[in-house]
Length: 170
Picture 1: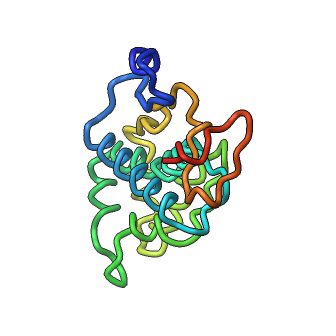
Picture 2 (picture 1 turned 60 degrees about the horizontal axis):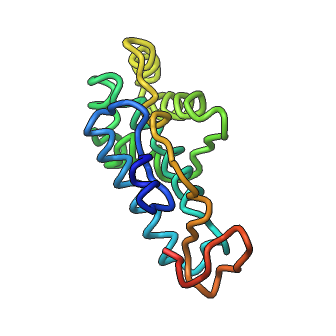
């Protein structure tokens, strides 16, 4: 990341340690999807930074950390259940209720609550505990000045001394 910053990049998304390629694909896809939504959505708040979009993607990606920690949990999470909807789809839709600083705790509780509806609550609780999971979403970092890279339409962005001019909006 440092080499890219020294070469002129305003911001670089990198990992602190090597991460699972499946996880990286999920994380990158979610970030790019949220970034595209933020750019194209006329309701995107003025002066929304790429860093804020990254935090949104990173927050919801904790469920991938949880499910990839155990093959049986992943199989359960991505399988069709009641109403032809997978548990992972149920997790991602609606109010996920994840609080800053308690992402993993809240994500576990939400998965267990979803599992309780299908009678799988105790199995899911066990899978979360053994062998556990690695919080890979926390292994990413945004270097440089990602808060200076703003998304949205140029008409929704105000210019300040610490931000980029509207013509440099992503």
